[in-house]
Image (cartoon, rainbow, N blue to C red):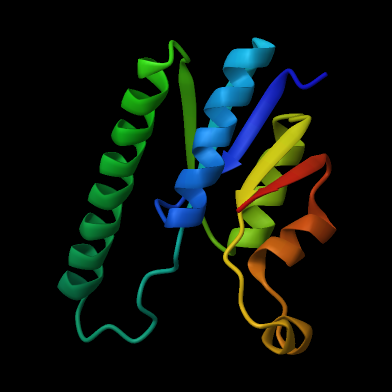
Length: 140
């Protein structure tokens, strides 16, 4: 069934729910488990290069901590975890990692908004659904 599982992971409540589902599925299926995190762009109008460097260091530390926590949680269930951190647009990067890694399942956390909001603007989860090269599981 599913042998390569990718979870989009940013540390949010929805992402943590998706990650827990990914761990359970990987364990039940004997599948590989991977996470992808996407860094937001650095400030475009920074006052100085030191402001950009400080922002980058803060972002890097956040994702190092996030990845360590995810690996530790997976290890508690006997699952090894590979992590990828990308920079850029989250929808593009998540879809690209899923395509490059030939994943057969992508798990996303779903953060609901009102039906009106989603029809007008759309959501990240909906955009990824349209661009994903594999099956997608939305975890609520």
